[in-house]
Amino acid sequence: MSKPFTEPKPLSPVQPVSLGLQDRFQFRCHKGIACFNKCCENTDILLTPYDVLRLKNRLDLSSREFIDRYTRDCELDAHGTPGLKLGHKPGSQACIFLEPDGCGVYQDRPAACRYYALGMMSLRRKGSPVDEDSYFVVKEDHCLGHIEPQEQTVGEYRAGQEVGRYDDANREWRRIILKKRSAGPTVGRPSQRSFELFFFASYDIDGFRAFVASEGFRKVFELDPDEHRKLLSDDEALLQFAFRFLRQALYGEATIPVRAQAVGERGQRVMEKLAKNAQASAEERAKQQDALYESLLDEDRFGAREE
Ligand code: SF4
Ligand code: SF4
Image 1 (spheres, protein in one colour):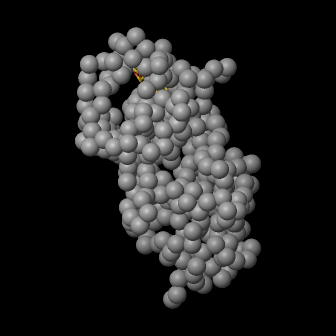
Image 2: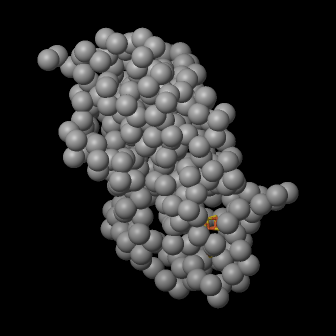
Image 3: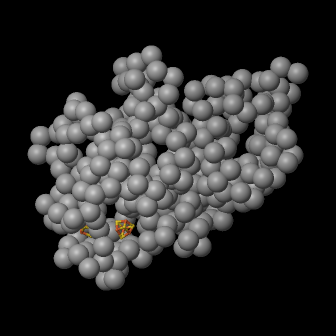
């Protein structure tokens, strides 16, 4: 059942009604429509970690190459938490992947493109242990899809756009961001290192894989060998592990067992081996990652597991 949406923005294209999965709305987008491609000519697409994973694999690029070529930096919140948006074609606001006959990466387009003309919001109500998703219609003047004679439920639309897989893959990441936001600005700005760590584990999946493969990582974290092997060969499993890692590194949650003895060896030796084994492809990036790895394995960041 529809209910009033409490925070409508004045002049916002967001319709002031929050929808559930069973609620219906009128919309159809198709190639023959007069406004075809209009929405992709003026874009502001926030990328999630799973979007980056899908796109960089589609384009057969490393995550770093993809970030450098196709994205622009942004801030996810008032703290300045770093995020990524999809890039534009030079001198315009058009999406970098827009082609005359439509989206050039359609099968792997980001979640935000799949959802449009719906938006999604996750909230955790006070006292509730779970997040609740709600949806809203975004009605922009140029979009004629809203007058097409087709109605569907939010659930049917989501299924048609295959967004469930994206939402599942990004759920833990959204929780991490919600937790960061709910900490509020009064606790002070997070450190630069926390920002770098968040960006690295969220978006640079190939750099993160090299980190997990490194000897230094295995010396500090105690992973079952089968689990470790799976992480190195399965991008989606690795991404979920990256979010576990973030919860441990940012919030001190004991999500990954830590070897007490190895954590005690905070000296040069672990760091040298770590740097040697990290497989960064560019020299400058390798230097930056070595510095980052060093901070990631700082003994102050993790609680050692009792043995
Ligand atoms: S990725 Fe595709 S659908 Fe999304 S804005 Fe770009 S061209 Fe449009
Ligand atoms: S109907 Fe809306 S979403 Fe579809 S092409 Fe036109 S402007 Fe884009």
